[in-house]
Length: 286
Image 1 (cartoon, rainbow, N blue to C red):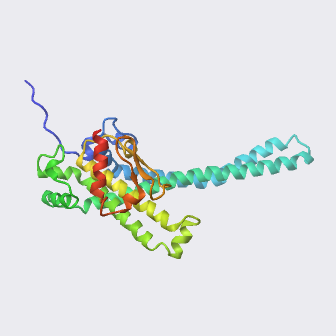
Image 2 (cartoon, rainbow, N blue to C red):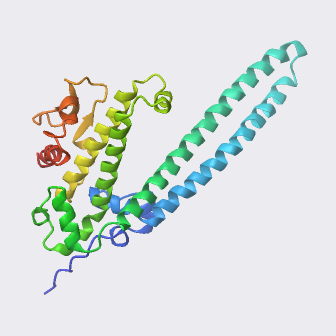
Image 3 (cartoon, rainbow, N blue to C red):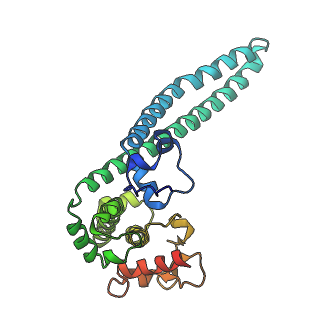
């Protein structure tokens, strides 16, 4: 008679192989497991490597593309009369310049994406390390978030809470971002911020960012209460930041769940993060 293997705590090492952690994820992994995989140092190193590779590619493209067009011009111009060569040279110069800009901008965009991802994951990992080590302290933290730890599915004892620390770190990050944008909105007349917005109403831009971070914090709050959730934010809802105060800002894919307006989201007394999280839990369980 065979006995069942003992359960193993969630860890970056036990979830997937190194290649899976860097280049792909198991289809069956849930949101928490994917987050743990992202926090593996090898993933951060991968993004830093890609950042450097695309930076080199961007620099090389500034020289290689014009060189290729120059070679093409030489081949094309050799059999042509001088009078025909001028428009050909002009055309190839314009095409070469536009192509160089396009290729360079493509590599620049890729470089910035990996750079931002590496920076974000490194900061999140640092935030994770700063969380309490004692499970009782984690339970106290969850209580401050209006979460009863012993009602979380799969959590049978206090020690199990350590598996949820990546989600807690992500939640704290979202809350800090929300507070940052709320502060910016309160000081929206700042000349520097107005210049940064360049044509966009500064208050609306800051408010949109603050409300978006609040929504994402509520989503993570809900995932903490439902750690086996296997989907993504987009599987549950979408954000319409172009809406006015009395129109829906947050719409759920399940039409039986009432959408939430900008005005409702902005009211912290009636729609705090933990109340908003209840809507996401409803969507997860539908």
